[in-house]
Amino acid sequence: MIDDSRPIFLQIAELIENDIVDGALAEESQVPSTNEFAAFYRINPATAAKGVNRLVDDGILYKKRGIGMFVAAGARSRLVAQRRDDFFREYVQPMTREARKLGISTAQLTEMLHRTESTSDMTEGSVSR
Image (cartoon, rainbow, N blue to C red; front, side, top):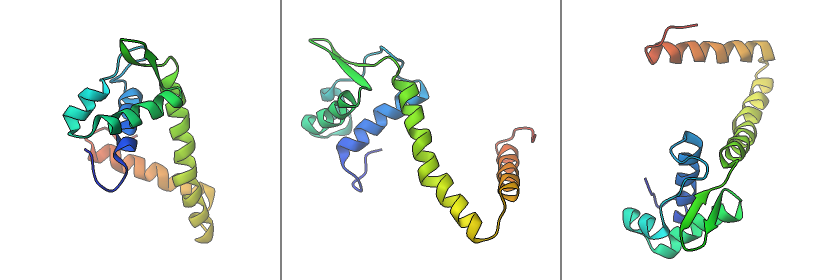
């Protein structure tokens, strides 16, 4: 899971964020310690701590002195909102700019998205809408 293309501490933070968004880490649940992350991913504990502390600084995790780190109340909804904003900025805006350049109308783009959705439903074995 850890790769060399990006800073490891950011990847640790993203792994925790993904677990929160996916529901594997519920609000008020304890997250693994920095030593557990370090042992599991064979990284320096200071690097793991940097990733965890980033989430503390962002209000996603909080410390209980002498006990550990926990998922903050509202963390999932904040992460989902942030990811939706990122998705819009990184994918939707560039896609709509390109569509405009190609003369694709909003209606045509919407139809393409529906067609893609139907195709993925069939590929996943679901009944198409």
